[in-house]
Image (cartoon, rainbow, N blue to C red; front, side, top):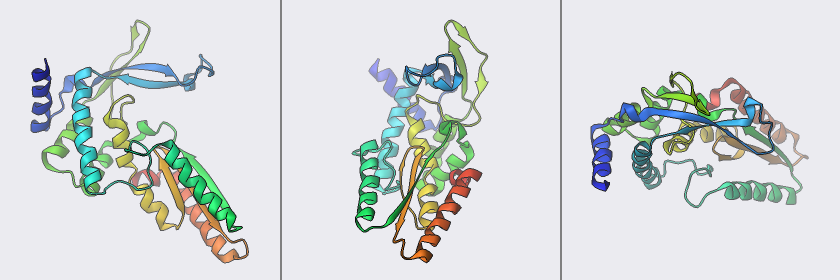
Length: 245
């Protein structure tokens, strides 16, 4: 059994093809919190039940992709999601530490929290592939495999014993996949560059973005410049530029 699975994984990676039959998923609505309204659609998260063999292939690719990113320092330093030795705790500690240090200097601190709605469903596959090529240096058969992985994907919704008709997934990443979270972080790599351009401090955790800045209230010019930077970033966020720039 192990040799058969190994052969399937090796064949997929060496050919640059992700099997079409493994790109089909059953989506089950999972209640986000027990306290939420059971009859409201917004209370549920669509989790994809992906085949076991597909997850094994994804795991092999995710391991190599993480090693490539780590070896060449291609990740965003202030992104704490899906990284070894990083968590929500490291993100909160960094932001809290910066805020407390600014307050110790009697500075004013502005903090804005951004949370993208249905973030995984908004991923443009062409933009993601371009980003993997230009920012991570992935090309050839490796890039072909990722293109194959994103292509011809279908899903059906399952509620009890009832199933919907299959739907082609032209955008987004499947919730419940192994590669999905890692690909989302890659997709949002330009965020750091955009925010730094406006001289703001920040920290990221997946689709949660903490923007903040501090300044001495005695110096109004410097404070006004930082606030204008805030406005620029927020306007780009509303227009969708943060995800596609």
